[in-house]
Length: 172
Image (cartoon, rainbow, N blue to C red; front, top):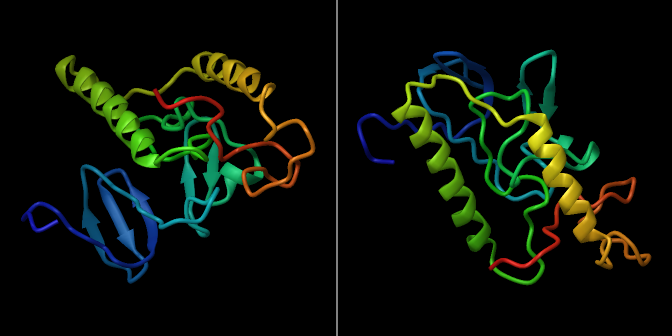
């Protein structure tokens, strides 16, 4: 954070533009990379967050819970090019440290960024078919877990009873 090419904006974010961000104070800050940390609130990307994707798709601060948002490896969402998140949907661990999940996700993000940089790719995103296949596996895993079936109600579920926060498998 002390590097000359790094800025910390410890305030709300009003807008993200192609060449930077606008803080809630109105200050424009040029940016190539944005790391948006919202703190810990299960299922929230920050209450006032609105992220515009392609094809009129958008996610809000509460989409992860409200809509049971689906993201490949909890990190990449179709129609949101060049967007990665850490500890996204279905990455919460009830049996281990989330540091393991974060490390795995960072490894995935670095692999994707390296591939893009090495091959001159400016824009990339996960295919919806890949996410659909991943979630087909994920929901099958939940078929054997009390979190989805068996009458369990918890903060891992949204109002419709769909598990949006929990990882259904092992961490090894």
